[in-house]
Length: 133
Length: 333
Image (cartoon, rainbow over all chains, first blue to last red; front, side):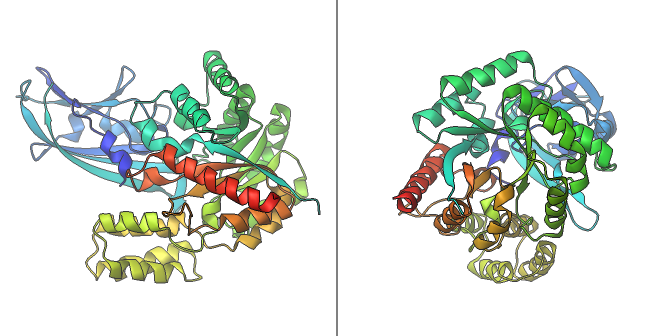
């Protein structure tokens, strides 16, 4: 999308534990948005993660990914990061490099377009090789 | 008519790229704006600069007031966002939108900003309902006229009719100068080329941009044409920016709404080697508003974070202020 994309995944964005991986991301708009205005798709080493099991965490609160559309009161400040939790049976180990394809979609709630007046979709795909912290 | 006067301000929107890096505090941005002498006024976007906006704490209020005082800035405008599509499957109705804006008016009141920049996402009816609340808070709702909302856009006509009917000093407009451009800026065209767009695709974009048709129609016309020339969907998205950001309203048309104008947005994209912004005729803009009796601020709004990271926003705003000083000197003698 634009220059703010470079902040979505920093070099230390990926971490792992016994249960799976965690991916920290920052939004690429210029201002805070609630989780209801966001959606994402994630591939780890080329494999789609199972959305049913994925959770998103902000400020210590965790929510199922599939409920994001309803989370209009859960705001992510533009300088803060959300964490995506992905359970895995055999997660990568610390120090291991993973190929991450992270598509972050923002639905801009004050820019309405088209005959249906839907929020503008500002989507970005970030592809990065990240070392598990 | 008595001539007006334009004062210079900076909107922190300009520093989006720097701010999102996390390397600057709010004080860093404000201090740097003062060090570079970028005007006497400051504009802040609530959802950009303040955590938990609009439900800000007393401590945040003290911090912001303290910083503007410390660095000697006048409180010009706080920017609200009118997020009617917060839940994209259930857009807000009129009353929900009214309630969504109220705490943002209160935030402006608490912080000491006389103007709350509002947006055309909400219809005239919403702002009409909010007038008593805004009056009580002593905050002017300044509705931004951002392209494609030119002075004769149907929604703006309705807003103007409502302004006449209600006749409240708490209603006004904030014209954005991206609405009255006479070319797609070179800085934007350069960013298209860096994204792999060809000169031929740019020519088609320029041709469609010059047509007197509504913006959505321009999107529809451009997509298939440049796709047949090999443009990828992300490249088409980039080219569409020219239509969504760069309006073609004649500068003179602003004269119709100057009595309702409470603030101005000095949108810009970049400068040539002589320090000129070729796509926006700021000399004509300043003359139009001063001759029309406008008394108030113009706040620099650098749009670079949407398309390039080649330049420092601080340098770019400084260049715009140099240009503005030159124009004001010419006009005022």
